[in-house]
Image: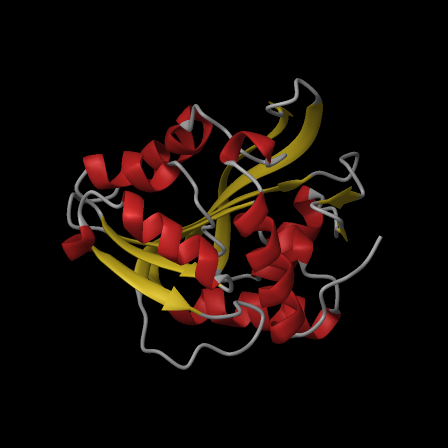
Length: 209
C-alpha cells in the first residue's frame, strides 16, 4: 500500500481518483449525510455560520449545508474535485474555494465556526503532516467554535483509495486537539460503503473553549 507524502504526490493521486471514479465507486461515499448533520445540529450554529470542509472532494454534504444557508469554505488538494464540485454548486456566492494541501501551513486568512472533517485526517501518516493539520485547525476555528471528525476507528480498515491510513482512537484525537478543546459528543459508528461492506468510524465533536 503506497503513501502520498508530498503535496504534488497527493494532488496527483487524488486527481487520478476523481478523474476516473464515479461517486458510487468511492468507498467513503454516502448518499445520506444525516450522520454528519446529526453532529452539526449539536453545535447549534447560527444561520450565518461559516463552515470549513478540509478535503471536501465531491461530498454531498455541500448541497445539504447550502440548503441550510451556511457560508462554506471548500478545501481540497485536487483541482479535479473542486472543479466538479463547482459545477454542482447551487449557491456559489456562499462558497469560497481553497486549493490547498491541508497538511501544510495555510497561507490564506481563514476563519470558521466549525471544521468538518469526514475521512480526511486519517490519510495523513507523518507526524509533521498530522501536527500541521491540527495547527491549521486551531488557527481557523474561532473561540466558541467546533471541530467535527469522522475518521477510521482503531479497529477500522488499514487502507483506503490505494493508500495506507492512520486509524484513530478517541484518546488520540482528544490528545491532539489539546486542552483548549472540550469533547462534546462521540460514538463508534459502522459506516456502510456503496459496495455493501462496513467500516468502523470514530465520530467526535469538540468545542473550542
